[in-house]
Structures are given as structure tokens and as C-alpha cells.
Image 1 (spheres, chains in turn blue, yellow):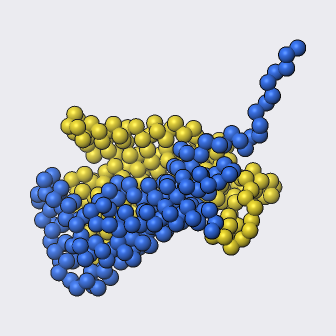
Image 2 (cartoon, each protein chain N blue to C red):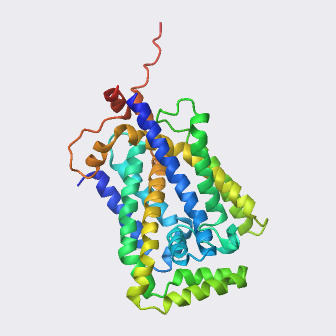
Image 3 (spheres, helix red, strand yellow):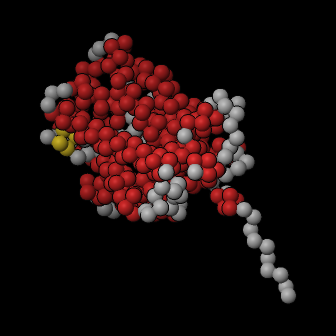
Length: 170
Length: 182
């Protein structure tokens, strides 16, 4: 398998599974798993590449990992979270309740309206938002891939050729 | 000439994307305030995948929170601003070279400090501090992302084909692509 694709699948799978798991996916409120997945994919590619990895390649690997992770989240994460009663949203609501009780009521009304619908209707109504989420996954995983190249690729000097010979003793 | 045009196209595409994202962030509260609830809900859900969206920590428009929190708004706005400034600040902006990586850590510093001070109860951070620290990070990120996209603009589609293994293209450096184009 192409090493770029292998790295992207590994990063994307991990990103998708972590983002799909109820409670664990709460870390995604700061894009943690998405950035991590994209960065991991680029890091794995850097490790497997014999030549210095270009930023563009980091972007490509990150974007592909984001697409894979986003699809997993769309196909597995969304139904799983609906079945689990959207624990992430409930936790955020509890947090808001402590900060601002008035705003919680509006959110609770919206949440209860959605939760009273049948599963398929809930899934279909959540789908357009999840598609925007997929785009966000690609964007942030791309950023993760790029940052990984900037941070972990330290072989850029090799492209400039071998170091100059030491001065001769006259 | 072709390289210059591709670099300009890559930068324009990024700028368009950043402005669209900012527009969507502002469109969510506007749609919510004007009764377009389905559209607003879609936007809130979409951005909810990458932001906590706590209303108390978000800017409001007509008493409805933005689609992302104040810090994320800062990151997106700073990124757009960084993109706009990029051609003015960097004379050699068509070349795909990034600033030193230390800038990335310097840019992340204020966010970490602002968050840590609030987390440990030393200082209560404000909308403005979150916006400002986020904007600084976003603007610096733009200076790393533009060269990467310019690099893709130069190398173009063949690299994507090589990525999925449909083509046995040899891996060439960015300089190689530049020579081909000239």
C-alpha cells in the first residue's frame, strides 16, 4: 500500500473512532482528536519516508485522514451518539447550567424537541450538520498534518546538499 | 509566470474559504434571530464538532451566540486577517517557504497562558482576551498554511494521483516542479 495512504488510514481511523465514542469525543470541543489524527498521519508518514517530507504532503495526508475520520464519525459516531442520548451535549448543558442557567433552558427545549423524534428522523435532521462537520474535520486535520510537518520534519537541511568540507591545514 | 498565477490562485482560494467560514459563523446567529431555525441548527451542529459553543463564552448577535466560541472566532478572524496581510508582509510570498517553527510556539503561548490563568483561578479571562489570543494564533497559522497551499498549487493534481497509488510518479522536490514550469 502507498505509505501516504497507509499513514492517512491509521490517523483517520484513530481520529474517527475517538470522535465517534460517546464521552471520549467531548475532547473534540477543542478539536483535539481531529488535530491529533491529522498530525499522527503526517508523523507516521514522516517516519516512513526516506526523503524530507514537504509541507504539501503533510497537508495531503492530513486532509485524507480528516476525510476518513469524518466519514467514520458520520457513519458510526452520529448514530452511536443519538442512541446513547447525546451524552456530550448533556454534559455541555450541565456546564452551562453552572455558568448561566437562563441559557440552559433554551438549549434544553431544543434538545428535548429533537430527542422526542424517532431515531431515523433524528439521524436525518442531524445529517446536514454532520456534513458540515465532515468539512471541518478535513480542515482541522489538514492543519494537524501541516503542523506535524513543521514540528517533526527536521531533515530540511538535507535538501541543500552535503555540508562543506573542513578547512585544509596549510 | 505559471507558478505566479498558481500561487495567486491558491492564495485567493484560501482567502475565499476563510471569508466563507467567517460568514457562516455570523450567519448562524443571524438565521436563528430571523426564524431560519433549520439553517441555524445545521450551522450550530456543524461547528459543534470542533467547538464547545458555550453561549457564555461566545459573542452574541441579536442575543444569539455565534456558531463558535470567542477564542475560535478569534482564530478564524485572525486567520483571515493573516491571509490578507500575507502578500503585504512577505515580499517573496510566491515562494513556498515557511517562517521558523518557533513562531508557532510563540503564537500558541498567549492562548496557553490565557487558558491556564483562568483555569487556576488566577485571572478571569474575558471575551476580548480570548479573541485576541486566538486571533494572534490564527494569523501566525496563516503564514504556515499559505506556503503549503502554494506548494500544492505548484505540484498540482499529479501528486494527488500519486497519493492514492494510481500513478507511479517519482517523488520530486518543489524545486523540481518549479523548473518544469519555467
